[in-house]
Amino acid sequence: MGIFGKVTQVGIVNYSLKLICCLFLGLVTLAAHGQTKKYDIVIYGGTSARVAAALQSSRMGKSVVLIEPTNRIGGLTTGGLGQTDIGNKQAIGGISREFYENIKKYYDDPKNWKWEKKSDYKDGGQTRTEDGEPTMWTFEPSAALAVYKDMMDREKIKMVYNERLNRESGVKKVDGKIESITMESGKTFKGKVFLDATYEGDLMASAGVSYAVGRESNAEYGETLNGVQANSINRALTGFVSKNAFNHNFIPGVDPYVIKGDPASGLLPNVNEKPGLEGEGDKKIQAYCFRMCLTDHPENRIPFQKPANYDEINYELLFRNYEARKGPIREMYSYGNSLLPWINSSMPNRKTDTNNKFGFSTDYIGRNYDYPEASYAEREKIIEEHRNYQMGLMWTLANHPRIPEEVREEASRWGTTKDEFERADGWQQQLYVREARRMVSDYVMTQQNCEALEVAEDGIGLAAYGMDSHNVQRYVDANGYVQNEGNVEAHGFKPYPISYGALVPKKEECTNLIVPVCVSSTHIAFGSIRMEPVFMVLGQSAATAAALAIDANVNVQDVPYPNLKEQLLKDGQRLK
Image (tube, rainbow, N blue to C red; front, side, top):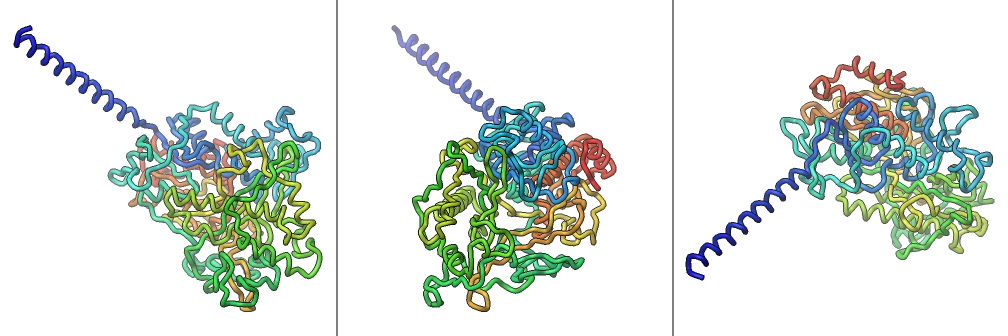
C-alpha cells in the first residue's frame, strides 16, 4: 500500500472517531435535556397534603408531578398515625373527607380483616367512628397507603420516588418566580406553580422565603400560650384553662442528677438547669417520636429488641419516676390508669397507634432542636437516634429489672408488626415531625385566630383541634427536681378558618410558590393547625389556587378570592 493509501486510511479513521464523538455528545446532550421535565404544577414533599394536592391538580386538568423524597407516600398518615386528630369531624371536607370515606369502604371488605374479625374491633381514643357513619377515622398504615394509591391510580399524576431536593443550589428563580427545582441526582423539574408539601419546609427555605423556627414570645403577637410555659395551668386569651405541665410530667420528687442529691455529679441526659423566662421565645422545638404500630397478636408480633448502642443512663429518669411513686402504679397519675407510659389507640387487626403519655415516654425531649435546619445526613442521624431511643425504651419497659414486674409483663405482650413497614424490625421510616420551619408571610395565623378574636376573611379550610404542643425541654425546678416544660393542651373553641394568605409567601419573595404544611403561623397556632386531615384540606386548597393562578396567568398572591372560594365549595371543602 502506498503513502496515499495510508493517509486516506488514517483520515477515514479520524473522521469516524470524530463522528462517534459527535454522536456520543449528542446523545449525552439529549439525555441531559431528557432529565428536565415540565409540568403545570410541581409538588415536592411526602405528606398527606401533597397527595391531596396532586389529586386536585389532576382533577382540575393540570399536568402534575409528585416528587417523593423517600419510597413511601403519605407521611404520617401512612407512617403510623392512624388515630385521626380532628377536634370536630364536621370541619373536614373535600378530598380529606373522601379519604376517610374510602377507609370505611376498605374495611367494609372482609378480605382486609386478617388478624381479627370486624365484629370484634372497637375503636377508641380521641376520635371514634359512630354507627352509620360513612367515614372511618382509625386505620392501619397499610390501609392508608392502599387507599392513597387507589385514589391516585384513578388520576393522571406523575409519581417520582427517592428524589431529594438539592437544598444548596437546586432552586432556580427568575424575576421572583421559581423556574425549576433540581434534585441531588441532577434531575430537574420545571413548573408554572410549585407546592412545598414537606414537613420541614425545605423548598420554601431554599427559595429564599422567610420562616421561623422555635417559639415566639407571647409579646410578639399578643398571645398567652406561646414561649416558655413552665406552669401547671395557664389561661387562653378568652379565659378558658390550658393544662400545661399538669399533664405529661414527672411525679414529684424525681432527682435530676447522675448521683442523687449531688449537683456536682452533673445532670442526667437531656436535662437543663433552667427553662427560661415565662412567656419568652426560644429556638427549641416540641418533641418528636415514632407513632408506633404495635400488635399483641403472637403470629404478627416482633418482640422488642435491645439496640446495639443501648445505654441504661438514658432511662434513669424512667426508673426514678416509678421509684418515686407513693402507691400503686395505676394511681401514679390523676388522669389515665394504664400501667404503661404510652397511649395505645386500637386500630383494626389487633394493632395500635401508640403515642406519648406521662412524664417519660416515647417523645425524645430535647433531641430534635437541630432537625429543621440540619443537612440530610444530619437529619438521618437524628432520626436514627430517635429510633434507637424509642427501641431502647420499649426493651427497657419489657425487660429491665428496675421496671416493676407488672409493667414488664404488660409491655412484653406487645411488639412491632411484621406486615406494616419496609424494615425487617417493624419500625417505620417516618419520624413524627410535629413542627419544623414555619413560613412568615404577610398574614400570620396566631392564637387570636384560634379563639375567634380575629377571623380570616379569605378562609380556604377549617382547623378544629385545640392548641396543642408536646413538651419542649426538661429542667430542674425550684425544689431541685426534674420537670418537663412546653406541654400545652388548650381545648374549648369552635372550628376557625385558615387564611389563604398564610399559604402564600410575601410577594417580593416568591410569586409562584404555595406552602400548605409549614404555613405562616405562630408556634401555638400551628399546634392547632398541624393535623393530618387539615393538611389534606390545605393541600387540596393549595392545588386549587395553583390551577386558578395558571388559568388566569396571575401570581399566586393575586388569585381572586371569590373565584377560589367558589371552586373550593364546588369541590366539597368546608369553609364555615
